[in-house]
Amino acid sequence: MVRSLCFFLIVSAIFAILSCSDDSRFTDEPPPAVIWVVPSSDLDQNERGIDALPEGTSIQLNWYRSTNDLVVGYELYRSTERSGSYQIIANKQVLKNDDTLYVDVVDPSMVNRRLYYYMTAVNDIGTRSEPSDTISYRLIEKATNLLPQGSIAERRPVFSWTDLNQINNYIIRVLKSESGNYIWICHTFGVYGPTVQQIEYNIDGSALLDSLNSGEEYIWRVDIVGPENNSGSESQWAVFQIQ
Image 1: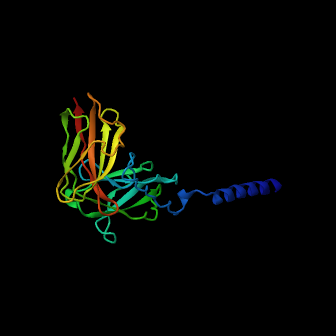
Image 2: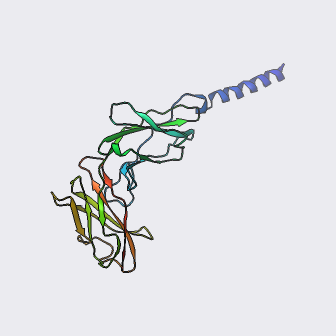
Image 3: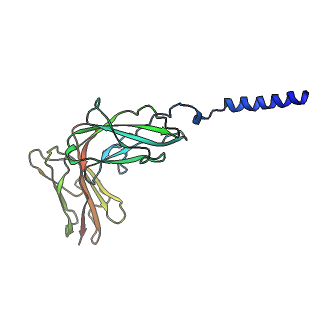
């Protein structure tokens, strides 16, 4: 009798412990909401957060990995209106639990339209988090006709480009081609009226090199800073070599 009672008490204790264990796999509790990475400064070398990209009509989205170990992926939604109908553009099969970056390649017809995004985290039994904050970005037309390109002799070249937006607010980025190290980042305002803008290398004295090195190859681009928050474009990279 005593032995049976002891066995019953042991089994009951084990059952009570298992019943009280905190294993969210057996609950419908949603994971924490996704948190977006705050966009970096226009002059930062490490460009983070929602931003335009040089490649095509692309928008970079950047978030923090979920702290919930049971999250298996994310779902990303997009709309052309903040309060409009959102469509899923990437699911948990595309966005895994360790992912923190997605590049949205939008149709060229979406340029000059503001796009809105939110994201949910999804756990291993399919429970979704509350939607993240809604963020947005408006791509504008890229700068084109970048010069110099190819082989040049001038060690302090004049950079020129065409801006059909005539926004006149620019970031010039010059890097060593081989290493990707920055040589010069310059914030400049263009001349109102002309679509062709230009600036001389290191005119502000902030470059790492007072003049560029002969025999070196460099890449450069123009970022146009839009008139609204989270708006702009990044030109494709141009390549030149100093003779």
